[in-house]
Structure formats: C-alpha cells, structure tokens
Image (cartoon, rainbow, N blue to C red; front, side):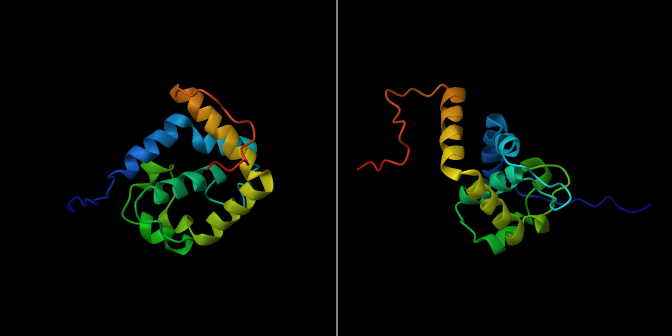
Length: 137
C-alpha cells in the first residue's frame, strides 16, 4: 500500500480577501455584465478580477506574468473556483479580462460595484457624488 501524500497550500490573508469577494459576489457581478466565451478561457472575467484583487491585496503586487508563480502555493480552488490552476491565471488571460473590462466601460462597472458594496455592507455615507469622474482634493 502506498503512503498517503499530503500537499500543503498557504491560505493566509488571501483567504479573507477571497471570502469577502465571495460574500460580495464580485465574480458573479462582472460575469453577469460581460460576455464570457467558455471555449476561449478556463477562467471567467469575474474570476480573473477576483484573482487580481487577491494578488493586489496580497502585499506583493506581482506583474501579470508573475501571477502563476504567486498562486502556485495557494489553494486556488478555495480562493477562486474549482478546476482553476495557477497556469490558467497567466498574463494573456488577465490581459484579455482587463481589455474586456475596458470595452464594457470600466468606470461605470466599478461605480456600480462600489454602490452595491456600500449597500450590501450597509456602510454609512452622507453624500454620494453622482459624477464619479470628479477629482477630490
């Protein structure tokens, strides 16, 4: 009988970030607004956004081509989704997701996401400037 092989994956704080993304349904939000071609990608646009959020809040800020290395020791199935592997989170997939976000109108997408998050978390706010392009000093 062969010995049982164990593999250790680091969850650390990306687990908290992934859990919040899951609670806020961030992947679903983007996937509902941008057409995904399942034949062209293993990772949906929403999952790619979550991967970039996890990486960006991972205190490393890896460039896109370094994402597979960033995720290789992490439980991707628990952080992003079943069946996704580190090599699926490459610069081509993430770059295409960013292009799709831009084509869909990234400013409106992010403004609507921010409103959704504020409402979901019941965050207090006194005013909301409808002009999200205005620069604050």
